[in-house]
Length: 176
Image 1 (tube, one colour):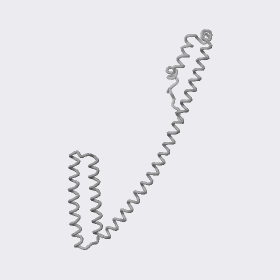
Image 2 (cartoon, helix red, strand yellow; image 1 turned 135 degrees about the horizontal axis):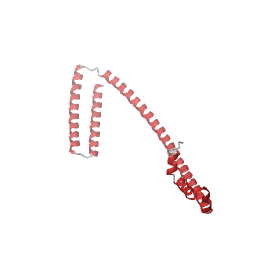
Image 3 (cartoon, one colour; image 1 turned 180 degrees about the vertical axis):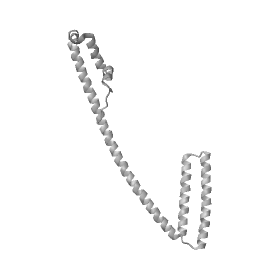
């Protein structure tokens, strides 16, 4: 636990602390020996009791804040552990997706050895699908500029993505 000084120097403590000022003024006013004659002993005991109560109150506040800090630190450690495990899982998923993508690329490159006629038909199909996709994307861009609602834009983008996936699947099936 770290302790933070309330006052940076002893001189600042002498001038800023209200208790030091209070008792210092009593000494100046009554002197060292004269204070006992002019001050009621009950007032001294009452002031001492109030100081003890204030000290206990300060300690209990400190203990309560320390317990809250412990709970926050425990929660922080739990969250860090959870995020670390999620990061590891995401990293494994990423590595798996990369490996599957590499395998799929190799498989497609092996299947891409087609005859000339099949290649021409394939390129024509790709050209048509690209034109349709570009037209759909242009329409989607116009809708964005016109201020279509966010939900509708999301649906349109999802449909465009679905169309592109379907086109890719059709092209892959034609390659096979």
